[in-house]
Length: 41
Image (cartoon, rainbow, N blue to C red; front, side, top):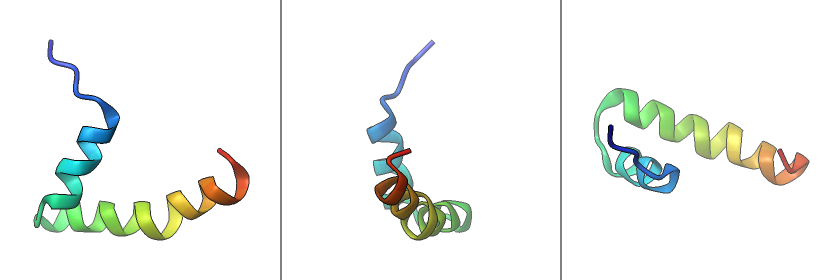
C-alpha cells in the first residue's frame, strides 16, 4: 500500500486539468478553505 501525504494530493489536483479536478479545486478554494479560516475547522 502506498500512502500519499495530503499536501501532495492537493498539489496533484491543483496541477491537473481534468474537469473533475478543476471542480474539486474550485470547491476547495471557494468553500472549504475560507470556512476553515473562519471557523478553525
